[in-house]
Amino acid sequence: MNNIKSDKVLFYTTFALLVFGLIMISSAGIAYSKTRFGDSYFFFKRQLVGVSIGLIAMYFAQRINYNFWKKISFPFFLLSLFLLILVFVPGVGSKIYGASRWLQIGHLSFQPSEMLKLNLVIYLAAWIESRGNLIKDFFEGLLPFAAIVGMISFLLMKQPDMGTLGVIILTAAGMFFVSGSKFSHMFLMGSAGAAALFLLIKMESYRMNRLLVFLHPELDPRGIGYQINQALLAIGSGGIFGVGLGHSLQKFNYLPEPVGDSIFAIIGEELGLVGCLVLLGLFTFFALRGFKIAKNAPDSFGRLLAAGIVSWIFFQAAINISAISGIIPLTGIPLPFISYGGTSIVFLMTGVGILLNISKQTKITS
Image (cartoon, rainbow, N blue to C red; front, top):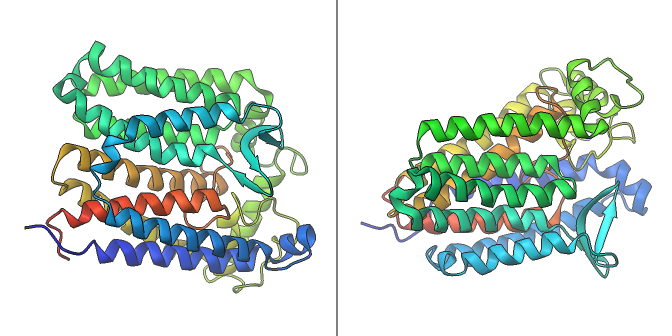
C-alpha cells in the first residue's frame, strides 16, 4: 500500500543540513564578505535566497509524479549539453580563476554543471531502464554507457572541472552497478578510469602539483601547498570541541574560499571533532535513508533515479570532505547543502524533492 505522505525522516535530515549550512556560512563568511562586498553577511543573505528558492523547487518536485521526469529526460539532457558548450562562448560564458564554468546573466551567474548533475541522473535512469537486460551486454550496454559518460567528461575537462567530473563518474558508475551490470564490466570501467586519470594528471602541471602536495603536504606551504596546509591547520586547531562558533581565525583571509570548497575546515576549527562527526552523521543518515527509498521503489526507473540522486549527493560530500582533510588530492567542489552557491542548492533541493516523491510510492513507514 502506497504512502500518502513523503518520507519525513529524509525531509528533516535535509532541513537539518540546510540549517547547519546557513549557520556556518553566516560564521565563515563574515571576514570574506566584509572584505569583498563591505557587508559582513553578504554570503549569508544570498544563500538564504538560494535556500528559499530551493525549498520552493523541492515542494513542487515532491508533488510531481517522478515518472514525469522520464518523459522529459532526453530534452533536459540536451539542454544541459547545450549550456555546457555555451560557457565557452565569449560574452556569454564567464571565466573565473582560469576556468570556464559559469554563464553570466546580468548580475547573476549560473553554473551549468550543477544542473547537469541532476539532469544526467534522470537521463541515465531512463536510458538504463530502456535497455533492460541488454545493459549486461558489452555492445548494447557498456559501450553506449561509456560513450555518454565520455562525452560529458570531455566537456567538463575543457572547462576544466575535475571535481564535478569525479562526482559524475562515480554517480554514473553507481547507477550502472545498481542496474545489475556485470562485475567484469565494472572492473573494465574502473581500470579505464584509473588510466584516464593518470593521463589527465600528467597533462597539466597544476594537477601534478596537487598530487605532489597530497603526497608531501609540507611542500611549498606558501605556494601550491597553501590551501591544504591552511585547511589542515584549521581542522587541527579545533580539537575535540572546537574554538567556538564564530571564533575561527583561519576565516580572516587566511583560508581561501572559506564559504565554498573549504567550509569543512572552518567547521572543524569552530565546532571541532564533535561538529564534524555530527555533519558526517547527517550525510550518512541521509544516504542510508535515500538508499532505503531506492530499494523499496516500485519500479526500475524509480530505483535507479533514487539511487542516482543519493549517490550524487553522498559522493560529492565524500569528495569535498576527503579533499579538504588531506585524504585525497585537493579538488574544487562544494559541500552539498553547506557550501555557498545558489545554483547548487536549487538543483540539490530539486533532487531531494524528486526523492521525496519516490518515497510516497514505497512501503517505508518509519
